[in-house]
Image 1 (cartoon, helix red, strand yellow):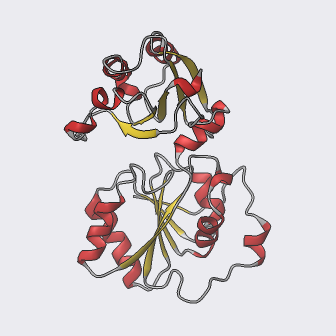
Image 2 (cartoon, rainbow, N blue to C red):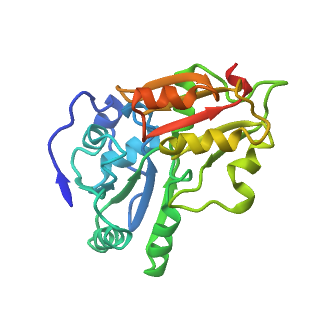
Length: 259
């Protein structure tokens, strides 16, 4: 477990947070806040998320996914704990101990907590010990990727449906939600947590409404300084991704909206 206290680099706390750091009555009192940090860029956190962080006393965050500079900038007075090496029980114990000590406590997640955020199991743990919590949404990486591509995910007469999904891996996928099933719809697909299995992704999609000529893109670390964008088709996207060395923290987007 790492506790980080040094000032962040490259970001400046917004003036409205420096001047007015008071909450409405009841916020952050005896309650854990699950906050979405956004996709990476520190300026893409929500105003409410930044405001809550600025008054936090304890922030538990996944250092492998959330920018350390973001946390240190928006929570300059908090004890900051990196949960990357912790399991569910250990993380919960920290949250519970912090609340019992009367500290204003935040669990900071990448993107939006509701999208592949694994917060349900954490909330169940808090329910079991009678601790209240609330969720503050964030910008999920799908929207940062669309912005990087300068592309709508829905277009009239092309696609009015967007599906967020993943390929089955260590986490199983319900049978009716297998990529082969979803590929039959022909909608815009945003595929999370799957770029390391892109060969299998392409093979699954080609069993449905998509063809080798279907447009595809991969955006790695969307909105981060080292963001990478790969654009192609299902015929060549695998080779392009392998050549670029992208194997994690990337989204695969497929659909005619990219044409």
